[in-house]
Image 1 (spheres, rainbow, N blue to C red):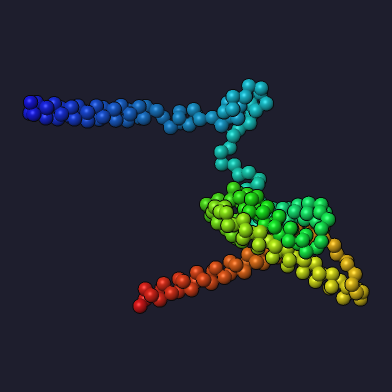
Image 2: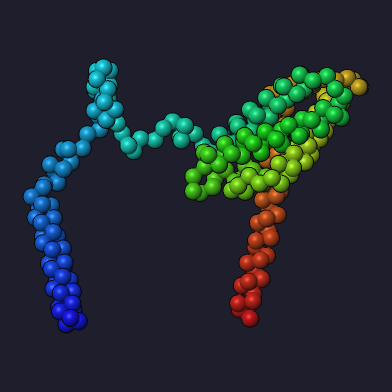
Amino acid sequence: MAKKKKKFQETTIENYYDLKVDKIDELVAALKEESPAQSENNITYNVAEITGDKSGRNAQREFDPYKVDRFSKIPVWVKALFVKFWFAGCVCYFIMFGLQINELDKLALLGAVLGLVVDVLVNPLFRYMESDKKEYNAYMMFPFPFRAFWTFFTNVIYYILVIIVVKLCYDGLNELINLISGTQNELKVGVEPLLFGVFTVIIDMIFIGIKDGIVLLIRKRKNAKKEGTLNV
């Protein structure tokens, strides 16, 4: 019985491979019969045929799979700075002009709301727009690939600090104007969304630049230590 079973298995395996070889031969023959020109002619880029539109409006339109959209042509730094400026201006508009509270509470509330907006909206938007090169990391203070619970508090604390420095920028600008004009204790420049957005983006990018410089120095020292250890 064992010999018959073994003989049956060997015959089955041989038949199995014979069948596979025949199928490969058939496939090669079919590929030889089909010409490259014929296969290319079967591909259509007509929008009406692809979408099934029978209205005739897209009869002459051709779909270009390699076309780069206009939004992708805008430099990354322009998009990143504009997004940060726009959200900062919106926060200023709704908080500064919408609430009647004392100045200290207003500064704290501005920073807290801006940190919340950055954590919930701005950073996820940057993650959505970025490629595998992570080009938007240079425009985030905490460029983590995920939004953890603790990033909410760090962004709130960080942007309260940013708003305090922005307030100092306004004070310094008014002092400079008073010094040039020869007046004293006169408010020349008030808080409004456009200049507030500009000051916020400038201060934010300065802090991010300092952070990136510190991280770069730490990485260089670690690499130098590793190279020194390997040389030894």
